[in-house]
Structure formats: C-alpha cells, structure tokens
Image (tube, rainbow, N blue to C red; front, side, top):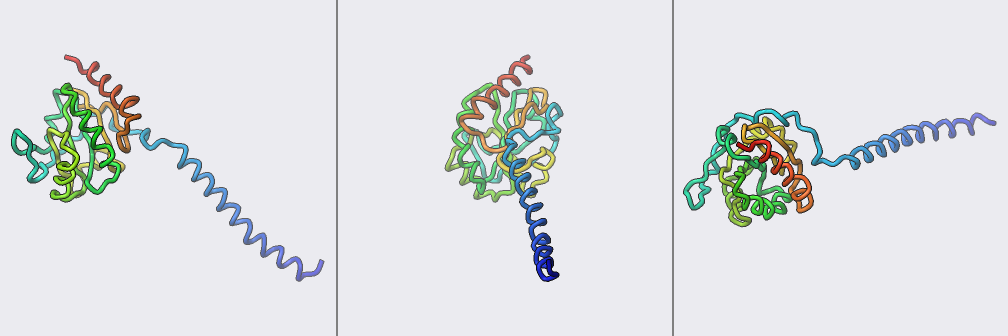
Amino acid sequence: MSEQTVAPRRRSWIVIVPLVIFAGLAALFAIRLGAGDPSRLPSALIGRVAPQTPLPPLEGLTNVKGPVPGLDPAALKGPVSIVNVFASWCVPCHDEAPLLLKLADDKRIQMIGINYKDGADNARRFLGRHGNPFTRVGTDGNGRGSIEWGVYGVPETFVINRDGTIAYKLVGPITNENLDKVLKPAIEKALQRSAP
C-alpha cells in the first residue's frame, strides 16, 4: 500500500471516531431525557415544613370579600393547602386553570397561588379570564421565594398538610389524568393524615 492511500484512511478515522462518540452520547442523553417523568422529580422538601417566606399580595386583586391577601406562612397551618405556582406567560398554566377551579370546589382545602415572575396587570387579567381559585395569592417577582420552595419551573403544585409540612409536589401542569390518579389521592392522604 502506498503512503498516499494510508493517509486518507487515517484522516477518515479521525473524522469518524468523534462522530461515533458524539452520536453515542446524544443517544444516551435522549434516552435518559425521555425516560424520566418530570412530574416525578424528587423534592428534598417532602416531609419538611413549607418555606416560611411571606410573599406580598398581588396588587389590585380582589374578590367578594375584598383584597386577596398574599402568602403568609402562618396560613399554611390549619386546613390542608394546595399551593400552585403559576404565571400568565406560562402556556401550561392556562391549560390547568379549569382544573384548579375544579379543585377549589372542595371546601376541605384552601387554594393558595404563587405568581411567579409576572406583571401584576398580566396576572390579574389571567385570573380574570380563567377564574380565581385562590384564597391567597403571593407575588414572587424576582423568583427568590420560589427557589425556597424548590421550584424547577412553572407550573408546580404542592399539597401541604395541616401541620404546615409539604406532603406532595407535582412538577408540571395538572391534567385530568394526574388530577385523578395522583393529586386527589395525595390530597385525600393529607386530609386523613391531618384529621383532627
């Protein structure tokens, strides 16, 4: 074999080997990314007291009782609470809004919203358009409060026991399927566990 034939073969291996390695890593990444259910991401906060960070009310938001209060950590003790992190710019938040209203029909629980990195006008319009299921709405304009809650992104929903501890965390939007199969059973468990 001449030197001229060996040189192109070496060059082709230099090109092919990195491409094969890259393709293998890309396939592994795709498999790992697709294999996990993002709603099952673990939360280090399960079983711990909910963050004690007060959040101011959503400016100008009212209901039949008057101004809707913000998030006061003391309000998380007593009834079982559902805390939903939402934003008007979040597309899945629009999709889950009717299901939050459905949850709010259960008078055994209180619904609390955390409005994440949103403008007050936009958030009020969002709640006006879809209905306001929340008895309290705290605003988290810079996202620091949500970091303390361990929020990965919006929407996320937490079930809080009567003693103020986090019982369950749902990452991603509430759907008809996970409402019936996951969230409602978590709420029932919290109600039974927390029964006076």
